[in-house]
Image (cartoon, rainbow, N blue to C red; front, side, top):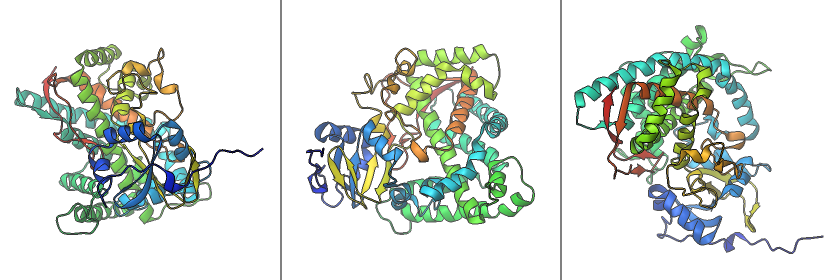
Length: 449
C-alpha cells in the first residue's frame, strides 16, 4: 500500500527571508539563538535561506538532529559542511574527514582517549592547574576591588594544560604567539571577506595556520625518536591493526585541530560555569561544600563520579551555552524530512543551542536550573537527540571525556582556593561570530579563600 502523503519540493520549503545577498548571515553571526527560535516558532523544523551566500536549509528539533547526526544513509558530509568555514585553517582535522577515512583516523586516535591515557592526563594536569590558580590568587589580592577578567585567564590556563598534556612540554616564550594563532584560525572561519587582504580575519587566519604548522612540524622528528606518554608522541608512533601509521602531515593536522578543540571548548564551558556560579552564589556554595567533603587538594580519576552537583552544573552550563553552537553539513544525496525533499549539494545547518532551548522539551529553558538533569526530573531524556553538547553519531566529540575531566579538575581546585561573584543585574554578553565567547571577557570580583 503506497502512501498518499505528498513530499514537497525544495522550492516549497518556507523561506526565512532577510537582507538581499547577505540574507541571514548577520543573524547567523550575531543572534543565532533568538533568530533560530523565532524561525522555528514561525515556520517549523525546516527553513530555507542563505548565509554567506550558500544555498542552505536549517533543520531544528531533536528529530532533525537525529536524522543528521545518525546519518544512517550517509547522506550528510561532515567534511563538505565544515570545509567552507574552516578547511583552510584546520585542514584534514578529524572533524573534516568523512565515512571510511574518518573511521580509520578516529580508530588510531581513539587509543589516546581511553581510560589509562585519561588517568595519566589528569595526573599530569594537576600541577599546571595548581600553578595557574596560584597566579589567580595573587591577582585577586592585588586587584582588591578591581575586576578579574575570567575568559583570557581561563584560556591561558587551558592552553598551558593542553600543551603539557598533549605535547609533553610547557610553552615558553612562544605561548602568546601560539594562542594568538589559534584565536586567528578560529575567527577566520566566519570571515565575510574570504581572501587574504592584509589585516583581515582571513589574512590573520592564514598566518596563524602557518605559525602552527611550523611549530608542530619542527618537533615531529624528536617525538618519533624519543616518544613520551603525551598525545603528540602517541600520534607519532600510533598504528592500527594492519600497522598503518600517520604521516607527518597527518600528525600536524591532527595536533592543530585537537589542541584547538581541547582548550577552546573547555575554556568556553568553564567561562559559562563561572558566570552561572557567580550569578547563583547558592550553587557556588553547594559545589564548594561538595568539593570540601572529598577532603583532597586535587582529583584522581575515581573522584570524578563523586561530584554529582558539579555534574549537574556542568550539564546545565553546556545546555545554556553550547561551545559549538551550530553544526554544518552538506548533502551528498537527496534527503527527505518532515515532508520536504532536500536535494544533494545543499548546506544543512543544525543548532545545538536552539534545540537546547525548545520549550517543548525544557522547562523554563532560559533559566539556570541544574536540577533538571537530576534523577527525579531527567528532562534531557525525553529524546535521545535533544541534548547534544558534544554532537552525536560517528562524529561525536572524541575528546568529550577529556574535556569533562579537565573542566572538573580545574573547577574543583578553583572552588577550594577562590570565590567569585558578579552584580545581580549583570548578563554576560556573547560574541557568536566564531565560537561563543564573552564580549567583555567576563569581569568578576575574585576573592582568595
